[in-house]
Image (cartoon, rainbow, N blue to C red):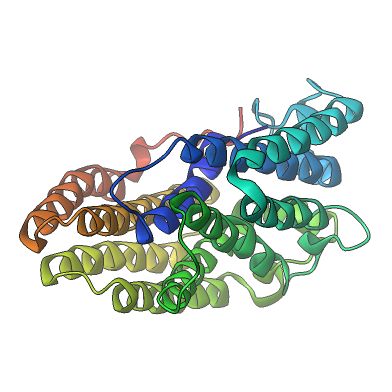
Length: 316
C-alpha cells in the first residue's frame, strides 16, 4: 500500500524541511523518519481504498496498488494493513523523540479522517485539497525539521506556504482521472463543482503564485532563479494544454508531464538548500542546479512533444 510515486513526493517535502535546517551532517534519523512517513502513507491508502472501493472499480483502477478493487485483498486484509502500518509509523518515530511523535500523530489523524466516517474529508470538495496539502507538504516538512534537529523559524513560513500552494495546484488535478467514478457515486470534488476550465485556471494561478513564493523564500542566485522559472513555464505550458485537451488518456499524460517539471523544480530547491548549507559557493551551486535542469529538460521535452509515446500505468 506504499505507492512509490506518491510516497516519494511526501519524502521530497521532508527532505526540503531537512535541507532548510541542514547542518554539516545528516543522521540516521532520516531513515527512521522515512520509514515512519511511508508507513503513515500506507495507513492513508488503506483507509482510502476501504472507503472508495466502488469508485475505484468504476474508474477501472485495477492495478496492483488497488488490491481491494481487484479482489486480491479483502476488507479484513486492508484493515489489518492499516493497523499494522500505524504501529510501524509510531514505532519508527520513537527514536526521533517527542517532537517526532508530535508530527506523526497528526499525520495519522489526517490519514484516517480524510477517508473515514464521520469526517470523511475526501467527500468535502473545499476541504479535501487542503487536507491533502497538510498531509503531503506541511507535516513532512515539519518532520524534516525534526530530523535536522532544528526549530521552526520565521523563514519557514513563506517556504511552506509556497510549497503548499504549488502542491495545491497539482492535487486539484488528481480528480481528472477519477471524475467518472466520483460523479457516479456522488462524490463532490472541485473539478465536478467548478468544471475543468475553472479548475485548470485555478491550478495555473496557484502554480505561478507558489513558485514565486518559493523563490522569494529561498532567495537563490540568478541562474537558479532562471532554472526555476523555466520549470514554472513548463508547468504552465502543460496546464494550458490540459485545459483544451479532451482525450482522457492525453489528459493523464499532460498532468504527468507537468508533474515531472514540478519534480525538477523541487529537486532544484533541495540542491540549492543543501549546497548552500554546506557552504558551497553560489557559482558552484548554480552550476549543479543548471545541469540538473538541462538534463531533466531533455526528458520533459521528449514527453511534451511526443505524448503519444507515453504509457499510462494507472489501469492494468
